[in-house]
Amino acid sequence: MRKSHPVRRAVLATAATVSGIVLLLSLKPGSDPGSADAAGGAVPPAAAQSPQGGARAIGDGTVTGDAAQTQYGAVQVRLTVNDGRITKAEAVQAPKGGQSDQITANAVPKLNQAAVAAQSADIDSVSGATYTSTGYKKSLQSALDKAAKAAGAGQGGGGDAQARTVTGDAAQTQYGAVQVRITVAGGKITKAEAVQAPKGGQSDQITANAVPKLNQAAVAAQNADLDAVSGATYTSTGYKKSLQSALDKAKAEAPPASSGASKAPEASDGAGSAGASGSGGSGAGSGKQQGGGGAKTLKNGTFTGDAEKTEYGTVQVRITVTGGKISRAEAVQAPKGGRSDQVTNLSVPRLNKAAVEAGSADIDAVSGATYTSAGYTKSLQSALDQAGG
Image (cartoon, rainbow, N blue to C red; front, side, top):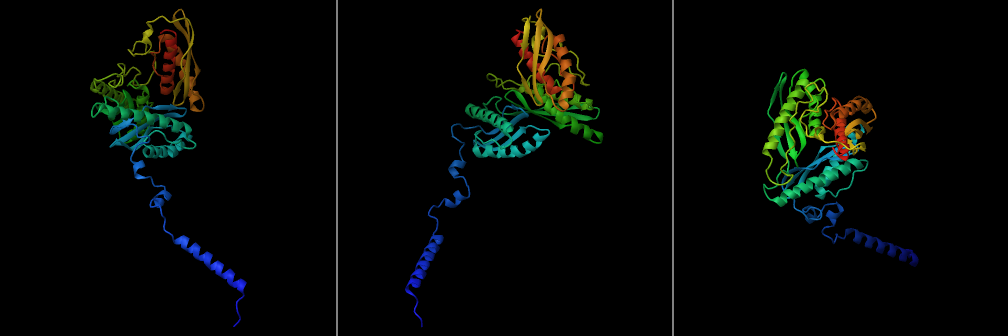
């Protein structure tokens, strides 16, 4: 038998030794008992059970944050809290229409999950949804503040910080009953919904078209002074009657306590002043609270109101005062682009004329231009305030 060469034997021995070491290392158990969880991204139990920072307790129940206006629409967050922890987060308002639908559908579920995971408003924005994320975090923080206030006040002592639900009387119409339920938080309507509405045959289509618009308008107006939806006169009239009933109940049931927390939404005395048909006209004598009815003499000059964000764009009003009265009103900013051009061209001249005639911001909304009208009225009131009205 031929003997192996000494050099060859040394190489083979070295290779065998290295292989053995590698094998031993691969079979060595992990020394850190938590390494498997860490690798899988599991949250340590202690971290999962306390809100970020752990500074404030939050009261149990459902609480809705303030609506945060963004460039593409309002965002409003509702939280469900159990045992001092957020167990559910949801956006009751979010931008919609056009590309916003896709962005909202992608971003909101992620933000909801992040809120529950973080137990705070310190969450990352969703890529491609910067405005929605910013609005979401603002409303979320508002909800957390209200929940913390409720917790501090003790059981049952949170005033109107937490959301309350009030259902109006059913209003009978020619095609069926309409009944409205509102959610009130912080003295504001945060949600409106029709728990009854006409149905069957053509009524199904009319209800599906009209009710969402009426719900949005109720939250935007914060009263029952809404325009009727075109083609849904009876449903609109019934909706406004039931909404007014809900507002009256909310006002009567508001906690008598403290400053601001006891405020219920203002129930408009002129709930039907816009008319069942939605026709406009001057509302100078309708008893609304804005504008002061022209009782004060204004300073002469030109005054530009604050820019008011609406769901479809900014509205800003400039007035000219001569002889203590509004001699001219004009919108220096108004929604534009797409259908907004047509709505603006129709509504702004009417609003300008109504402002001059009323001498105040106590003017009716133009039918079909609820958001523009609301923004116009707010900016007009801001200009009047500057003029001393």
